[in-house]
Every structure is written in C-alpha cells, then in structure tokens.
Length: 131
Image (cartoon, rainbow, N blue to C red; front, side, top):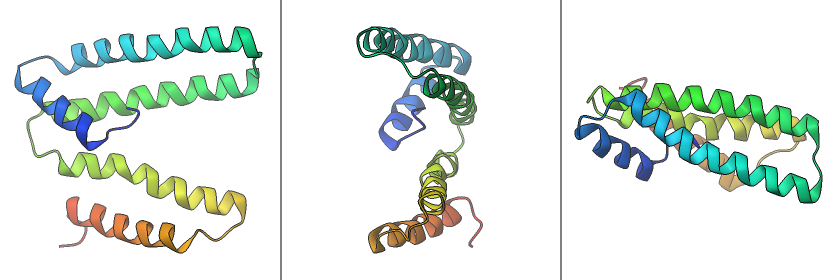
C-alpha cells in the first residue's frame, strides 16, 4: 500500500470500524488508486516512450504491493491493535536501506545507520521480539 503509513492506517482502521468488508475496501482502493496510476502511465509513456523491462518489473512489483496491502488491511480489519502490523509493514524501509547499501557497495550515511538502528529496535518492541 504504497505500503501502509500511519495516516492511511488510521483511515483504514476508521473504515473498518464502520463494518466495511476488508475485501471490498481493497477492491475499491485498488480500482481507484491503481487504475488512476495505470491510466496516467499510459499517457506518460505514450509521450515519453517506454522501457519495457522497467515496466514489467513495475508490474510485478505492483502485484506484490497489492498482495501486501490485502494482508495488511485484513490484519487491521480484525480489530486487534495495529502497531505490530504497521511495524512489520515499515520494515520494508529497513530492508531497502540494507539492500541498497549492498547493491551500491557503499556505507550508508550516519543518519541512515541511526535510523536503521532505531527502526529495528522499534519494530522489535512493537512485535514483541524485544520484551
């Protein structure tokens, strides 16, 4: 979801408090958001040309994103506290930082390292890895 951020998560929690089915919410969200981005991409690429390799990578990335959103929304719809699921969703930033540093063969800036450490501890606390 455009993976779960806190503000969107609170909106999602509000929606589910109104007894809207998680599947209906996902369908509506993806029809509106992903449909808009798909149509926008058609216009953009018709003007600027298209790199089919990157477009296919983005297509499969969007499928994985949709599945992640579905599972996160279903977790929020259970009514249990949302902290742990949002912490798990936000670990993507931690993973991207590490993978990017390895891919670029560069040491992250000290601020990124600080954020990585604080984020890892926060995720561990919220998911009860550290007690």
